[in-house]
Length: 418
Ligand SMILES: Nc1ncnc2c1ncn2[C@@H]1O[C@H](COP(=O)(O)OP(=O)(O)O)[C@@H](O)[C@H]1O
Ligand SMILES: Nc1ccn([C@@H]2O[C@H](COP(=O)(O)OP(=O)(O)O)[C@@H](O)[C@H]2O)c(=O)n1
Image (cartoon, rainbow, N blue to C red):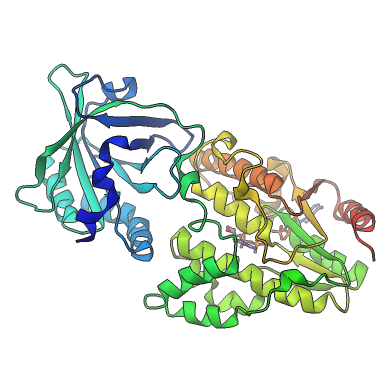
């Protein structure tokens, strides 16, 4: 019985719960204790019936996929008056201790429907359901762990009280990033795809394409220049121009040979999607090694994109929720070929929006989504700046295409022997 044997139950009262109230970094943190105590201030304002659903199965592929589909499942089955907020539960400072789920605030007229849906979910070995009860004085909240049975689903012996907990220094997702969002060697990314072969047959085809040679050991004869940046910052324009100006070979990551499967992996949860992109870099690296023995090589996106998008997506809120500067999470995988130069194209958000609109994208976003995207874009760009080995050189892509090209050509002259 995976659910009964999991470490969560034994360490229940050492856990911190962190509820993402608005994706803008407002976290409601609480811990649990066996003695009745006052709940945190933010908890005391809650009027609704509350529940949490945590996904904690033993099989990481199945759990990741289950969590990925959970929001839709809950939205489809629960009354519309149920508010769903992402919740993380973790042991402070303990790597890989994070468990994800949803916190529900139920303002519906029909509590029995919600309980029925959650009761059915609680039968699954992948899920742990709790309900939260407001004490008669209003200041105390207790948490009851549900047992697996729909009929006698409240296991009162597991009652704990909600108490304030210390604010974490960084987003709880940081605890689980290594080998869940970012992979620092080919073998770890391969492992994920190997584990997913049965449910995603395309994984096999990707694994077959990933070579076995360690391209990181070969120092290429010609320079390898990577162009990075958010969508519409001018990467395609720049890489094409550089190819012409330098008589260079042009590559991209993910490489062309992965195109047939990209859409499949883009529909998968981060664990699987990020492993796919990580492996794309190794395939591109092999091509880089070969091509750079004959001519300069220009690469459209590479490791900086893989790491930065993965890290920036795994956390929510402002730039301060990213892993701190200098964190080993920004390191370069030792078995991945390092380029001679990485250029990061940056653009004023208004100009970037204008270019997206000129391409026919970006004009339909709602205000809230834009706001949310703004924080996301800031996180990606900051993560780009923090990735090391080599660090990127930032270039303002606002001036005319020719001016930006001249500037990058100058940088190449400074950094690389041509
Ligand atoms: N320096 C520039 N000044 C003005 N427009 C540019 C410049 N560079 C690119 N563009 C235009 O902006 C849009 C996005 O550029 P593109 O190279 O496709 O970006 P990316 O590959 O980063 O998504 C295109 O329509 C392109 O013609
Ligand atoms: N080397 C790479 C390239 C892209 N990616 C992912 O691909 C997405 C960007 O794809 P895109 O379609 O916007 O890129 P372009 O084709 O516009 O350059 C990002 O969300 C990254 O998560 C990656 O992880 N690693």
